Image (cartoon, rainbow, N blue to C red; front, side, top):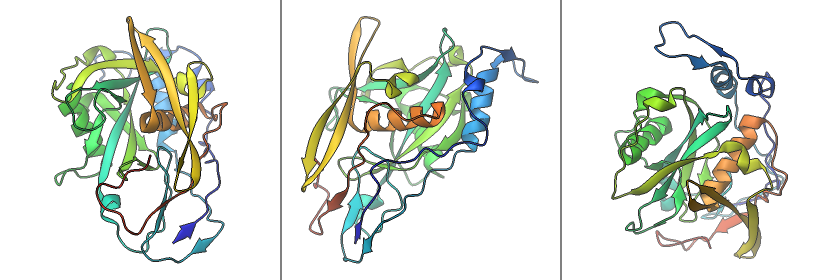
Length: 283
């Protein structure tokens, strides 16, 4: 099957603009809440619940058994899959956990993976992992993994929406789950040393700005695409946020702030060859 996608994913607007609700540091007390809750976080939660992932219009569809069109590091729409492809059936979910920083701006929780891991060792990632049999849905997967990796209690996180799936270079379908942490002081990180080396946070708005951003053009099976990189420093430590994690954060920031980044995302088209197995990787 061959599909031709438009190069840029439109941002589906919410019914009410987010800009006004995210611009003023007003607070109110939620009934029965032990602590004040940010008005902006509450408004953000309401707006994100209205979010509907965009649906791509396929300009041309051609039946060709055993072939899949996908994107690496970018959102995946309803891929036409003529026959089930084993790596595509494997799901994962990551938690895009947002909270309000001391300056009133939104921040996102990130981790640096343990250097002892067999894959993606030492890389910056969002809390998350592969779905397990007992997981009810993607939200359950993301919150369970966050608890196991960094000790984030799911009761502290208000899960508000999910974004369209992304594909990792190992052809793993990754669903971003957006959650809001209203009481950041209640989160006391407890790291699983086997998986996570450190936990930190970064400003969400950084991912739709040119500052700290760079990109590289890559090619796979004749198709060109962009890999995005963000250089970030905090508490005297330098982090490189790139690839799938950067792609998800660009998309999340675009949805939250209701505007696209000033740089080209370049959503590429990839065809997974019919002869592929668990070791097939997109480079």
